[in-house]
Image (cartoon, rainbow over all chains, first blue to last red; front, side):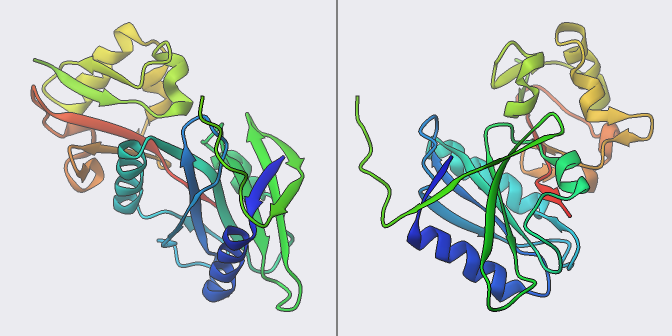
Length: 143
Length: 90
């Protein structure tokens, strides 16, 4: 299950709409081990394509350095599909290399309908999971 | 002195869970050969018969080695190498 704050959900959808007809992509980072998508980080799609996305390699290094410094990991990796459903493509499955991430797919094929779904992608196997949108993430447990 | 190589989550199965390992060599290719001697299987995830794999990024300090000399990029003690899988899809 992915629990995500309403504002973050809206940020992801807005980014996908803004970049349409190209695919949009980014991450939501969170403290390591917490599974909390706290920090929305839209990325540039270096491919600038309606059918492919790739984080720019220099931006990717900067992102991971930044997350490392903050003790974060990519809790959510999101991207949009611009003409097809919000389900991982064969390419998405082959290239998924963050075993701990929730892979969030947004479809922008219909400007009136929001389609946002979440998956785990492990060793080529896709498992859809529930997305629970909450007004705000529950307070962080400190122990 | 040696060269620190930072390993992404998905490849830590080859390093006993370590986030960073040390290696030696005069070029990136030699460094990867050295790592392979202690972390069998790692090299294959980074290179194929044509060179560095398309969806794996390797950085020497701050530079993508694709903009340097790829596997032939000279490396030296004190350098830091970072491996990051591309975040990409269709």
